[in-house]
Amino acid sequence: MTEQKEQILLSADFVKKNSPFKGKTDLAIITYRDPSFLKDYKAVKKIKYSDIPPVFGADADSGGELIYASTKNGRKNFYILNGHLNFYNGYKMREAAHPVYVLDALGVKNIIVMEEAGFLNPRFKVGGVAAVYDHINLMGDNPLIGENDSTIGTRFPDMSDPYDAKWYNSNTSLLRERKFMFYPAVYLGITGPETETEAECRFYRETGADILGYSLVPENIAMVHAGIKCAAFAMLSRELVADRLTEISDAEKRANRIKAERSFAPLLAEIISSVK
Image (tube, rainbow, N blue to C red; front, side, top):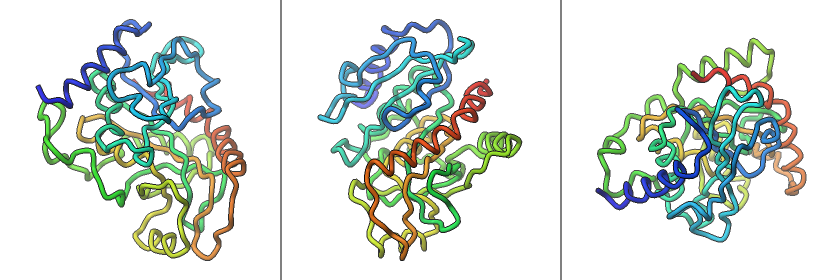
């Protein structure tokens, strides 16, 4: 057994041992820390990342938590990973992707990723929501580099459909039926955490990207590798259109993100309930 698989099973066994759930739990949400929509679900139990062996608590910014959650009516149980393990905090790529493999070992087959992002496409608006259908990896690294464990996934996973077109079409059809305004988007993954220069924003837009962020790409690559379906939505908290850049405070970004979260929350609840 590879060291990677040993670490995955160590984490998964701990999560199972502490689980209040009975039966199958095939859905998870991975999100940035403390989104406002958390209040819409029952937190049946919480475990700090730092209490889960071995790499969940590998740095000083590991204040996230795994939530055993359920819908308010109790009909659906799912996991919420409240906090990404970001590359810019010093995690190695495989460590950043480790939670995905743990969820796979727990039997999760569908993951919704919630991301906060800036937008490069001038048609998008602050406080809006983007539905990701593809990405570009400019992070300079990859969670699959190194030894491959064939019990986890194939050496050369096919990335031609990273955001499961069938699930994407189902979700966006629902959004249109509810007359919810959203932006189909290509996501650009970069390292962060510094903000982007005018020249970088111009270059990033020319690559064909609509939005950019720091968390989604390694997680998605790991999902494809493990055979997990991924749906990703970005809350648009800042404008990154070249020649229109202005300084924005953390408080303003947070307010913009919350505006997007609150508008999207009812649709997220429907998407969660629709997962079979």
